[in-house]
Image (tube, rainbow, N blue to C red; front, top):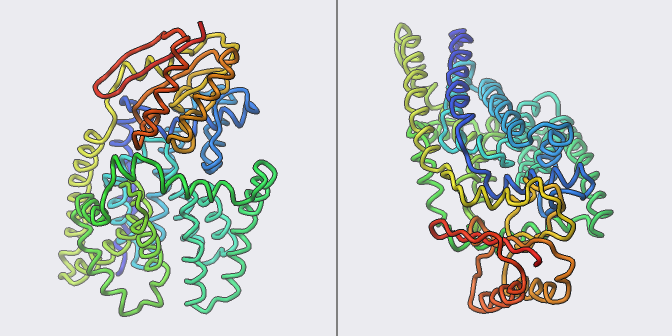
Amino acid sequence: MKSFGFNKIFIAAILSLLSVRILFFLDYSALLWDSAVYVSMGKFLFSLGTQGLWEHIRPVIWPFFLGFFWRIGLDPVLFGSMLELLLFAGCLLLIKLFVGRYYGENAGIMSSVLLGTSAIFFYESFNLYTEIPSLFFILLALVLFEKKAFFAGFSLALAFITKFPVGIFLPVIIIAYLIEKRWKNSVISFAGFSIPSIIFLISNKIAYGSALLPLIDASSAIRNVLGCNVLHYHPWTDYFIYLWKDNYFFVFALLGMFLCAINWRKFSLPLLSLLVPLIYFLQLHCREHRYLIFVIPFVIFFASGGLSYVVAKLEKRFKRKLFVFVIIVLLFYGIHNSVQFYRNAAEPRDSALEAYLHFIENKDVSGEVWSSNPGIGVYSSVPVKKIYYPVFDASLAASFASYLEKNKEKISYVFLDNCGGGIICPDSTCEAEYAGILKQLSTFSLDYNVTEGKCSYLVFSRA
């Protein structure tokens, strides 16, 4: 499709999207579970273990950035959010470049607007999760695919070390190179992927005695975690409902895919980029809407192609007006949809939780601190030991009860709560063992005991 030269439209659209995003930037948003883990890990990394906490099942790139901000004296939550905003903008530019390579500039502009007005993408850009950073590296790899095979693989490795499951994009680009009969590029790209990955695996070997331990244990944890597998379980069909509700314009992706099927070799990279992650996340028992972050850009790819085809079929004198009209409709509809999703999904202010997380902030603590919530590590200046990790069950509860019985004199504080993924027992055996924990803590002083809704927050200190 011939370009209308609407660079000004692209800039105006992106500025509109960023303006709406910035309007909500300082709005209160609770520090969610995984976000607290990454901030606490960053502190642990840059304090050499004297502050924060560590979870070996987590990738290291995002905690590294957050920890760097903390190390140089900046608020890791605030500046991490600012970095996430920049990566949000980067994703909008990268998808324009990727789509534009196949369909032209106007389709690229449509794709940026569609991505920027995706309710799920918009919401996830506030959470300090790994989805936006890893998506940035994935899109960068796809943009580099055509002429920079080594750096495409290297960028994809950074995505993998930011979020493990997106390593599935490695076979995507390798197979796409093979389909295009670019054998040398497939080897070069694999070499680019291997360098950061090998460094990561060697680090695992040194730290844990096994190069693959974080990957193996992360896979086990995601299969057994109670939150998304039981309490918030979703059937596989919900993914398609999420996609439909995210943006009704995604229906044009069906037309786009049909048109691409005619020349599937040319479109092998975007086709594989859509189908491989979609199939992977569908087969997981743990299904959350945020995993669609790695599917939505490629639904948008084909939706942009379908929309471009419709515009191209109209009379030439109407093209320009229709293109501008479509962009305006996408902006208004998408921004409204995104804001509504954010308001419905964002965690409300919980004063009881905030007081709980900040309880030992600025306090001198001489003994061990044990917690069922990683957020304690964000606001404390001591290392935090994990009660909940990797999955709280009868075995873990019995182990901690036994530790309490033998090591009470070492402990200064114990934090227990039943919200967010901490102390939630999957069965009666676990509940009985948890009762044993409370029995051991009966000799401690109960310094904080607040219930907010269904959530209870307890802080014990050694009397």
